[in-house]
Length: 219
Ligand code: GAR
Image (cartoon, rainbow, N blue to C red; front, top):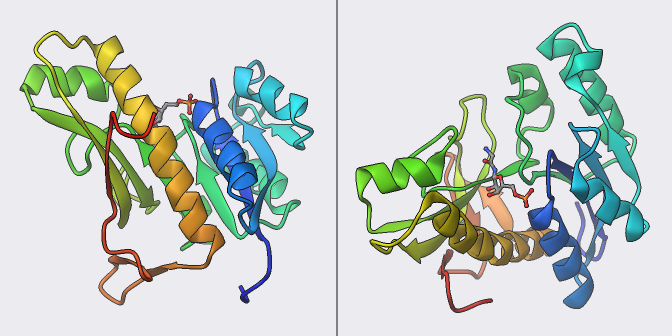
């Protein structure tokens, strides 16, 4: 990727797509050198798809029930994505576990947001897990995707305080608000070509020392 070229993002969703909307809006409002060139959904009726259509963004739907194996689904998914020649593929609430072959195909270009401070609470029901364990801080992580679920080099994290009165729903809302900010920032860094991986598989963001964001200050 050379300097001055507009970066192409394909965003993968399965539901509301509010993170996708935050990325699209950030790309527009900050006049970033990047475009969301397509939104791909793993669910037929994902509300995020309607929003993308309303913005004039090309959309694709790839549903697992139409495929006999995870491999064939991932091949079809990759074919849909690659039509748009993305520089980066951003998973934004994409609720499918991807095969190692898919992850390898997009090595260094595949990014995910997870609703916890990894490595704590991989998998599902992260807000419930956080409340059960009584942690006082919770949040989200944007990371490169590796074959191991919810692992991979950490690009940025967003942090929220946990209150005694929090429920999984209230905590999810707090975390989602900071997610939108963090993913927008990461999209900006990617668009400027600032993000790289070191030999020991850690992230470097050129010129950016602080890659933690605190919820409550950005909404
Ligand atoms: C977000 O909280 C995201 O972190 C989470 O799903 C939600 C999607 O919201 N992702 C995962 O749990 C991935 N394992 P959105 O569709 O409104 O962006």
